[in-house]
Image 1 (cartoon, helix red, strand yellow):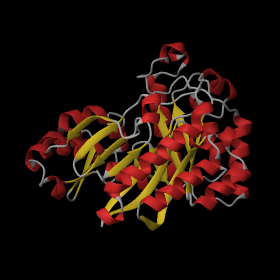
Image 2: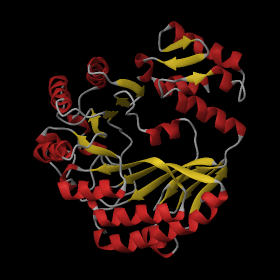
Image 3: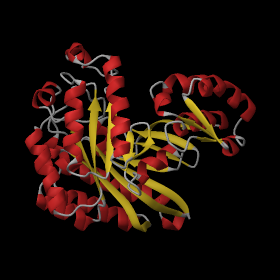
Image 4: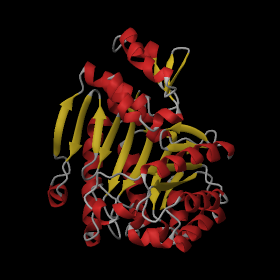
Amino acid sequence: MKDLSLYIHIPFCKTICLYCNFLTFANKQKKIPEYVDALMREISLRAQKYDGASGYAIQTIYFGGGTPSLIDPLLIKKIVQEIKKAFLVKRGCEITIECNPESVDSERVRIWRSTGITRFSLGVQSLNKKTLWRIARPHDAKMIFRALRVFKKARVKHFGVDFIMGLPGQTLDSFKEEVETILKYTPTHASFYFLSYDTKKIDLFAKECPGEEEQIVMYEWLCGRLKKAGFSHYEVSNWALKGEECEHNRRYWEQKDYLGLGLGAHSIVGGTMWENGSDFDAYLKNPLLVTNEMRIDKDLKRMEYIMLRLRTNKGINLREYEKMGDVKELSARAEEFITSEHIRKTGNSLKATEKGFLILEMITKKLI
């Protein structure tokens, strides 16, 4: 059987956060039932090519968005049931749902778990009331703590928290306090992303954000603090306790095949990459519309291998790379970064250090 992952895009939000660059809508909630119907049709039709009879087995399923937790949990259950009916889903399949604190309660968690969802990713971003308000998040710290208590009461074993570094009003001291507070709730996974300046509304609050040097200090402190708490830094923006890594995301970084379902979802299967259409009404009429379809040639696969593997703690395996490109040339290009301790060479691997993670884009370009 050929391994395959499924990504399910739920493009609905209560509000659109000012830092967000994803395909999502805050004014189409009345169309959720129509969207789910279209998604169900796409699942059924795509499975005709990628089901068990075609030689595919689903390893992981990921509900992203948008805010998947916003829609009726019974609709999530309906989608999962259709997936299990249409595809061959392996026993013990990791199923993740992204949640916002304001849409987490005990009944929703009960239904999600009865559906087979095994991982919960909670979009915290910040614990500061003013910061959350400034970036148009639809929740406050009380809602965050309530959601975390719901997870604890329900004995949810696998849940992570997402934060952003560099938000308006954030300081090193306030960031430290937030991290210490969240660790008391014992998440098993944590994602910390630098604020992206490649967003349409960044000018609304960019002047209120901490500078680059202060953000670097935050990151360096964070690396040490999470290591002390027993977390492994397994990808540039992700930390996990032993055995709690997100298998779905790790499959992306290892260039494994995945099928994206839903509006604007991306797919890579069998060496072909494509994107679902991003026009909402057009998707409702024909959920099989695709755009930007292309074959991944040997050189593109080689470049992606460098870019994706350097993001992880496994790094570039030189024996694997030998099948794609010139190892001597790659090693020669990496030498300056080994000398500056941005890359560490261990046996047959080239791995970015935490210092190297901070300039990963520059390293990647030079190695490519």
